[in-house]
Structure formats: structure tokens, C-alpha cells
Image (cartoon, rainbow, N blue to C red; front, top):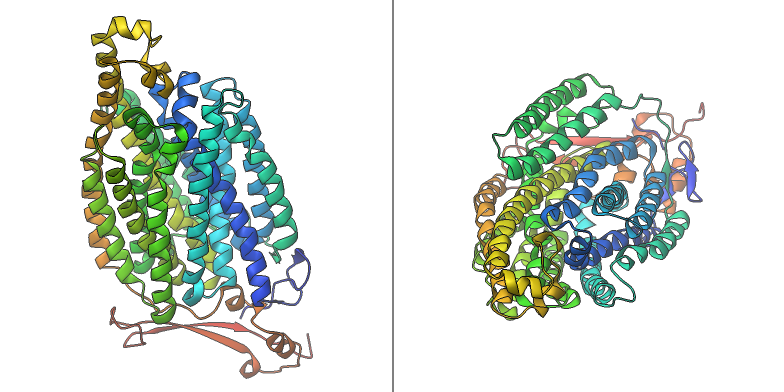
Amino acid sequence: MLAPTAESTGPGRDSGSAPIVLTRRRINTIFGALLAGMLMAALDQTIVSTAMPTIVGELGGVAHMAWMTTAYLLATTLVMPIYGKFGDLWGRRTLFLVAIGLFTVASIGAAMAPSFGWLVAWRGIQGLGGGGLMILSQAIIADIVPARERAKYMGPIGALFGLAAIVGPLVGGFFTDHESLGWEWAFWINVPVGIAVLGIGWFALTLPRKRSTTPVDVAGIVTLSAATTSLVLFTDVGGRDGWGSWQALALLAALVVSAVAFVAVELRAAEPIIPMTLFRNPTFVVATALGMAVGLGMFSAIAFMPTFLQMASGLSAANSGLLMLPMTAGIIVTIQSSAVYIARTGRYKIFTVAGVAVIMAAMIWMTSLTGASSLWTIGAMFFLLGAGLGLIMQNVVLAAQNAVPADQIGTATSTNNYFREVGATLGVAVFGTLFTSRLAENLTGALGSNAEQAAQAGITSPDTLVPTAVQAAGDPLKSAIVDAYAGSLAPVFWYLVPILAVALLLALFLKEIPLSDFAGMVARGEAVNSEEELAALSKPAATVEDAVVLEDVVPGNDRDDPRPGPGAEVRHYARSLPTEEN
């Protein structure tokens, strides 16, 4: 049985005091603090994406453009399991505040970066904070909101990302297009926002602070980090120097060795960062594989589209970012509509299947992108992609959280997101390598065939090419550069289609478990739903019959029927009421 371990008042309560009461006001206050943190991370991504072509051009990093995104995603991926596990062991409040602090400090470093290498390093540190903001937010929502109602909270999150998609490109484009400010302000703006979010989190996050004497799984952290880093470097080096090069083969060997070592370590660890028992849960496995496949396609498509729009369509940084708004609109529409249905019926599998199908259709359509594609056509492509993402993004996390016991919510959330980010990191690395290698070759040919005009325009190398220089160059040089970008990006989308076809097959096999009616903290005995329940806990109770028992029913053999059937599993979470002897 699980004894009450949550605090009752104040933001920094120790475990062992009375459970908190999850009133609607308290839930909304905590949720508001989470939204503030997620808004900061979301704004950073949209601001940087529109400023990236100018940043890499000024710092001489066009050939390594992918690392602007890959460094952030790699760091985010590395720390996700750590935040998830440590949150389960010690509570999530302090970790959330640490993540905000890391993100803010790294923004200062990125704004002051003297070279492209330093900028990539600070982007990686930003990822260490950004990974915590996203993982802990999802886990805390699962702590305070029952799975059946959780879908309703996805609507405001979708609207938040919509706000970031509107404000971010405008602000990032404004900074980039005005020389008196410069792209550095795309990072400086995070500082006051981060300080404000830190203050909100300090006072609003009333969450349990736990104590655990279990040794930290250091060996698991080290081996998992080694495996993840080896994977990303393998894809980068392999795409640049050849998959059969000795460097790529050495990294592949390091990946295999570190992955095997990680599994061996986790099988023996007292509190593994990623418990191997999770992979005996078929629902969790399918939901995680779906997240990985969709993450690979989603981030690959989004990461380089602003660059394509600025170079190939002649748009400013601000306008290229605003063209991402149709995607956000698609996400909001499908998240909102599916949330209503899920809350009413508890059914979510249908949306995962439909989401993958819609994303695959969007990817196939994007292969037809050219420099001559109309903005209306590009907007429609983005809307379709967003509609698919809105149908599946949060549902795979919901399925993973709902498939595990309440005391593993953080670990399940972080593991699911970890493999999604592995897919995203792998996708951006491979996609970026394919794109930039094609681009370097095509741009070299374009500049070589128009050498005299390029020299007059001050364009001496593909590595220092910025959108303003492209627009200032006249034809035929301008058309040659636009064609180089269009011809480099659009065909690469075909590589994502087979992966999404596999994801569609996986979605069909996702087992739909009835959604829990209890929030994670309630199930663990850290919170109650009302003052009446809190009062009942203070009454003497001598027998287990007087305990508060919560049940989650996992369906049996019939996957399509959410009701208990043959082989059904009933999970019991019991909160023993205090006895007179206590």
C-alpha cells in the first residue's frame, strides 16, 4: 500500500505530510505555470527557425546548418529519461525550476556566441533545459489530471503553440530583418521571459517533494548518453564522409557496444533510468514506436522549411515563419475536436491511425515543392501536416502513460518522449545531411556557372550565403540559387514515406486500454480530490477495509472492447488511512 507522501500547503513541501487537495483552482494554477514554461521553449524554437539562415550565414556555418537543430535535439534527448526518473524519485518541482534556469542561462550564452561552434554548444545547453520543460510538464499534467480528462488540456497547449507560431516568427523576423538589433535578440528575449517563468513556477508549482535513498543509476545515464551521442554522430559523419568510412564504422561500433552495455546495466540497476520491464508492455511499446516514427517525420519536415521559403520563395524571415501558421491551425483544430471525443468516449486509437495516414499524405504532397509553388499551396501542405500531428502527437503519450502504474508516470512519459526525440534527432541528422550535401553540390554548381555575377554580388562561398544576398542578386544567378534549394529539399521527403507506412501498420495494432479516472497523484496517495476525502484520511482506521482503494481496469483479450473481459487486469492503488497506532 502507498502511504500519503505529498505536502498540503506551500510550494516546497516535504513528503510525509498531508495530501494536497486537487481543487479545480489548484489544478488550473499549476497548469498555468506549466504553460508558461512550455511557451518559453516553444517561442525559442519558432524564433530561431526563422533567424537560422541569417545566423549560419553570418557565422559561416551553412554547410553545418543541421547542427543548429541537431545540437538542441540531441541534448534534449539525452536528459529526458533523467528528468523523468528523477521526477518519480524526488518530485518534479525543483527539477522544473532547474530546467528553466538552464534554458535562460544558455540563452545568454547563445546571444553572445563569437562563432558558430560556440553557438552550437550553447544550443546544446539550451536543450538540457528545454528537455526538462517538456517532459516535466507532461508528467505533472498526468499527476494532477485523470487520463480520461487529460485530452481536454491538450487544446490550450495546442493554442499555446499556435501563439508561439504567430509571435515567434514575427519577433524573430523583426530582429533578423533590422540591422540595429540583429539575430542575437532571438536569444536575448528569452532572458526576461525566463526570469518571469521562474518566478511563476516558484510560487505556483505546489507539488510533492519526495525523498529517496536509492542510488542514482549513474552507469545507466553514462551508457545511454554514449549510445545516443554515437547514434547522432554516426548519422552525421556517415552522411558527410560516407556510411562505409572508418569514422562512421567506428561510431556504429560505439553505438552497438554502448547500447548493449546500457541494457545490461539496466537489468541490474535498483532504479533503472529506463526499466526494461516497460518493454514487456505491448501497449507502451507500440505507442513509443509510433512516437519515434512520427517524430522522425515531423521534425525533419519542420526544421528546414523556413530556410526553403526564405531562399526559394524570396520571403523575409518574418513572412516565412508566418507561413507555418497553417500547420499550427491544423494542430489546434484536430487537437480540440479529438479531445472532446476522447473525454466523452475514452476512445483514442482511431485518432492515432488517422493521424499517421494524414501525415504520410502530407509528406507525399511535399515532394512536389518547387521554387514556383504558390504560397497558398504551401500553406495547404502545412495545414494537412498540422492536422495529422494534432491527431497523434499527444495521444501516443496518453496511451503510454495510461498503460503503466501511477508510480511510473514520469519514467513512462520520458521514455516515450526519448524515443520520439531519438527519431527526431535521427531524422533531422539524416534529412539535414541529405539536404545539405545536395545543397552544397547544387550551390557550388550554381555559383560556378555564374562566377562573374556572383563575384559582383559579393557571394564568394555557399557557406556565407544569406537570404538578403540571394534576393539582391539578379537573374540568372538568383534563379540558379533558388533552383538549387528547391531541387535539394523536396526530393528528400520521399525518404520519410516508408517510415510512415510502418508507423501506420503499428497504429493498427495499438491496444486501446480504458483511460484511468484517477490522477497520478491521487492514485499514489499524494493527493485527494476534495476536502471530504482529506477529512476521511484523518479519521482512525484499523483495517484494510477502511482504506481508500482506487481501481484501474485494463481490458482482457478483446482489444476493441474497453470493458473488462477474459484475462482482464485490475490495478489496485490503496491509500491506507492512518491508524491510532500511527
